[in-house]
Length: 415
Image 1 (tube, helix red, strand yellow):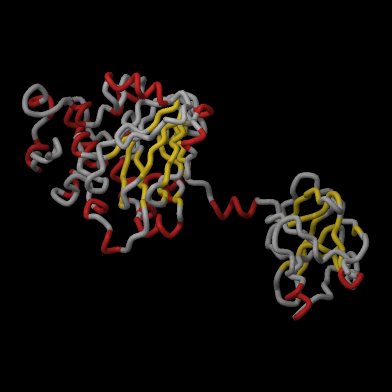
Image 2 (image 1 turned 135 degrees about the horizontal axis):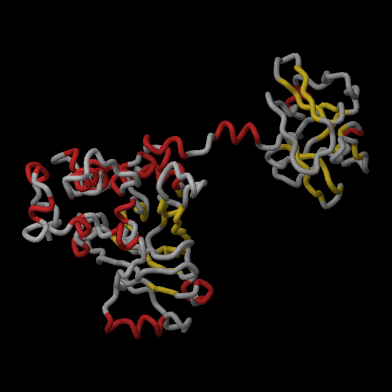
């Protein structure tokens, strides 16, 4: 079956939509996937036929006979009522992310899957959980009027419209690349990619780097920003130089972060990584370097043996060294000692909640800036593997953890 856009030629875009809207072309909103009207309060029908509704409702009661249909999946109006026999292997959330300042929005809302890319094994069950209402999970398929973007033989699966607090489960049985979208918010860029099974570059399908004729003509690929802006400007004579403000599914699926090899390597790709690949929304991302600089350099965490102690930004235990002199702004630990007891170094200091010790830095002989708490240089211990470890406590009678005020806690030595 050919896509409804397949017959369009480059020349056809020069003819205003109003001239053919009642003839051989679809109305504008249908051309755009009806996403705008549906997102305002969707009346989109369930993906299943009415005749199947009773059977679907029966399946959601939690009976042992509940199964995941290859086309309609398994819908649970209450996420807490999913039968124990249908325990999912993965979960994907569906989000509506408003601008931080609704009264002065610098961008439109983002509608997105989280994660936006995921790698699963053949036969895995994925649970889709909407955090906001009015979402679907629908396959790109000729039966839905789109270019096929799922493996051959996979039916045109779709969920019903989901409310917040509900869930939809689907079993991905065939290996391959699956591109899916949210019906009500498709035109607003809500799409994602699921990689099922392990495969190499030669196994990647051709549709992975195309989007309904994106190569011919390249600037008028349906659901690209250029296509949508053209449709806006052609709707009436009053529109001129309109710019599409929202994300587009073409931008999402073309993002390098959603390359199948990347998804397969990382396991999951968050929406933030996809957004970072889209230049016009780069300013909406948090400054990661700035975020790291403001993370607490020294924090307080409760230890089961030693009570509240100082830890670093990764919650690893910190120590002081009795051979240092309190308040002298110098270290007695270098070379082999520093390999075993790496100094806590940073260019900036940020104290976490409950840290009452004065935090300062001094320059080591190596040029690094080492952190001091209450005048004591701070160190980690190479043999601590995870937060909560304090294997260095009392080592050789000279290494000690510290309390929130920077006072050494000299308890029994580790033997």
